[in-house]
Amino acid sequence: MGHRKQSAPRHGSLSYRPRKRVRRVSGRIRHWPEQGTEPHIQGFAGYKVGMTHVILIDDKPNSPWFGREISRAVTIVDTPPMLVVAIRGYGQNGGELQAIGETWMENLPRDIRRVMPWPKEYDAKASLTKFTKLLDDVQELRIRLLTQPKQAGIGKKKPEIIECSMFGGTIKDQFDYVATLLGQEIRVRDIFQPGQFLDVVAVTKGKGFQGVVKRFGVSKLPHKSRKRIRAVGTLGPWNPSRIMYTVPRAGQMGFHQRTEYNKRLLRIGEKSDDITPAGGFPHYGNLQSDFLLIDGSIPGPSRRLVRLRVPSRPKPLPDKPPEIVYISTTAKK
Image (cartoon, rainbow, N blue to C red; front, side, top):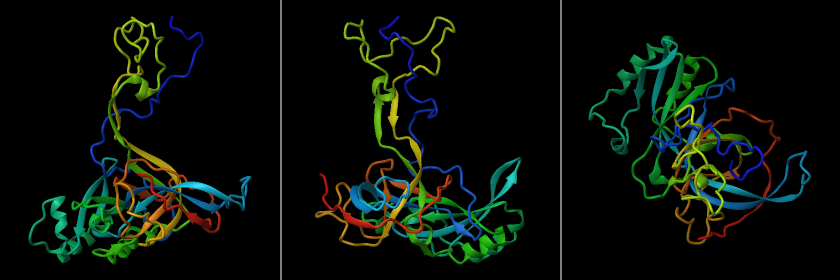
């Protein structure tokens, strides 16, 4: 019977299955939006620094605080320039995309060997010529970007290679555009603009093995219950004679990939002391390159790699970003 005398919604969403640790911290993006007419790159990456708060002028016309100063919690993301190291083409194979060719830049940085083995001699010009002949079979063009954590100042040596989609124009137009960028650095301001929305893909904080009360939010049993208090009241009926997947169970909590949509980009800044607190950010240090101020919180702890994507569910925007009056530089240890 239990102590509850009425029905209630189930505890814990069934959408996030399986609740297990991700394979890679760099995250994986399965969908790229189709927006824009000119060839452009649709993603970037950075490292989460921490959070602070700002005071800005509310620019939402339907807000009761329109035109007034409001306080907002913001997340700081360190975004050092990324290196365009490769171009990859995908073709159709049985209704699915499959890589049919790629070309890499000349004189790759030595740090690439921390990620993957690389031959001492590589003919980049011959590879580019060979890839050009495959453009007629390419259905989707993507670029591979190399992070540069040494410029972020987090004490990390091993970079990450992420893949971002291209969109706008024909495949030939996209190739002509990205061929000029091969081997060059791109900055976050080349892709995003202050005031726009973006999607954040990151891996959440890991919390280890947890019980059903913390993992799913089920109610504790009465204090006189037999044997257990922080457990599920029943594992299910006699028939079917098995435990159904919908029953909350203990297990891994956290370290899952999550996507948060339409996070507003308030500011794109450069290396500056007007935002870094005295002694640096807790668990991170000082900013040494470009950074973003994103409205609200994002998944993951400090120093976690964060992938940024153009919005897949775009919202209407004001003409210009909000005016920031004050940025707090008081760090909480």
